[in-house]
Length: 331
Ligand code: SAM
Ligand code: SF4
Image (cartoon, rainbow, N blue to C red; front, side, top):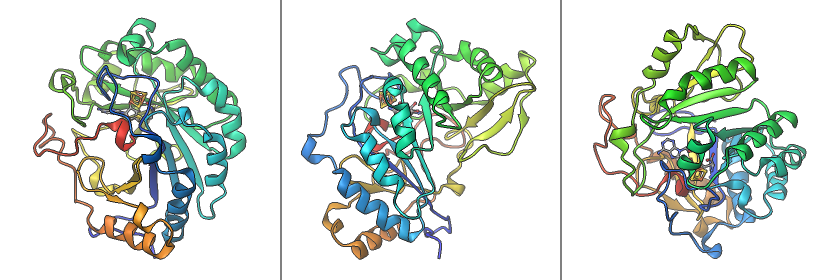
């Protein structure tokens, strides 16, 4: 019996934030000063996360994504990946990372059972990378991408948040990247999430902009079947390209009707929707699998039909959602 919500959507995917901390400070994700960090004792232990995964796997969860904050800064991440990859029923294990530490970890992560990575990269220009991340070095992220390719964390997907006035002039450079390398560049619409003002209305751009730029550059975007685990991305190939292009429109064409995700926050709360405030702690049920499973079903039952980040494709919030930024919920 598949795990379904009250709106009939099948759920097989759990995204787990293993930390709210990060070694970068991306302008669209958190304020300059970072976030108010959880103390170590507030973070759900690896042991407890595994209990949630085991309970979920028995119900039909088969795909897990590890995220954060930056998952590679949590101690013991490789051993944790090893444990999670051996949970019966989990057949797709991925990670979202900024990639800056991947040169150190890619080989071990692959050996531990990680299937693939999504690496966030919003610019190909060193100075702009420093500005967007406020402290990062582009070279480290690019080397991380090379390591992911080298050790076969495939398909290697690149997450690029499109922002007007920040990286919109680089759309064709990212498209060209897919001609040269077997990378799957996914443009993502900037989302108004969290509690600080990031000049959202000034920077939001619908992804029709990418289609326009591709056309102007004479790069025909041809629809293709989704590469492994593509989720909500519309996928395209450019003739003679080694990689693909994905478009993820959470705002202008939201994909709530096919949402298959549950989320576990770093402090151990289950959330059924990235946007809304509703979440329930797993700790009271953590030592009883039946209770955990009842909790998962309960959270899923209360899943709203859709987020309210924008009305009719117009940018801007309609109803106040969660005050958590992406680094706290796990993007
Ligand atoms: N630190 C890791 C990383 O950057 O890949 C994982 C966590 S990060 C919160 C996960 C994803 O959320 C990243 O791809 C990031 O670009 C995306 N993200 C964060 N804030 C966003 C926003 N306001 N709109 C769209 N995507 C956002
Ligand atoms: Fe860190 Fe990822 Fe947020 Fe950037 S997007 S600040 S790398 S958690």
